[in-house]
Amino acid sequence: MTSNQVLREIQKCDVNAWKATSDDKYSDGGHGYKTHTKYHELAFYDKMIEYFKGKRGQPHYDDDTKQLTFDLFNDVARKSLPEVFRMEVRLGNPRTIKAALKNARLPPDDITFQTLFRHDYSQQVLQWQLDDYYSRYPKIVSANAENELELLSDLFVQNSDRSMSTIMSAIALYTLNKQSGMRELKDVVGVKGVEALHRLAKKANDQLRYDTEKPEVFELLQAELDKFRPVYLADFFD
Image (cartoon, rainbow, N blue to C red; front, side, top):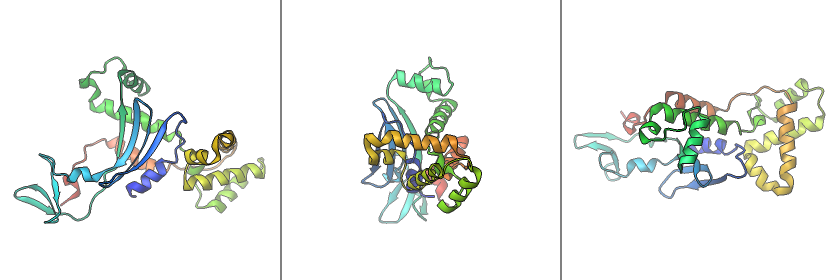
């Protein structure tokens, strides 16, 4: 799974209307997506070019030799450019930091650098942010079905007491969300259509029974967050 595929799936989450979003393509390589307010950002991005700028004490990529240079006597040929997908939480003032700690069930009063840069604190804050973000993923998109026809069959069998219009509305949401996401759908229907869209989504979530499975993207993010280990460029080369 590429970083672009991960970003497309992440953007399907129904972010609060009061949070702005931005989708960036960096001029020097990589893509990014973030939700943000004045003092809070949740950013997802891949910007591998940063690893090849030849900063002091870091490896750099030499275009002439086609090698990744670690030191004078230790050169390794580049096999393929790796992708490192990153998730970052950026908190802009003490009040926002304390709120993030409280949400993560951590003591909110101690916001010294020594505390904030602890491994377990960082992991727990990221965990809460990921859980909160995933809770906004459209449930109908997680339906365990190969295609719309299979979903129709499953919904019809498991929800014989529901009207066909409710089932077909759920399938329409499933199809549209597979291509984009609730935030983008809201932009299309405008202010007048948002409430109706919310009612359809709520009905699909609350009134219909169907099997679901967690999307691969969020499974991968959770697995890496559980490990929560540093990533070194040297790990990608022999």
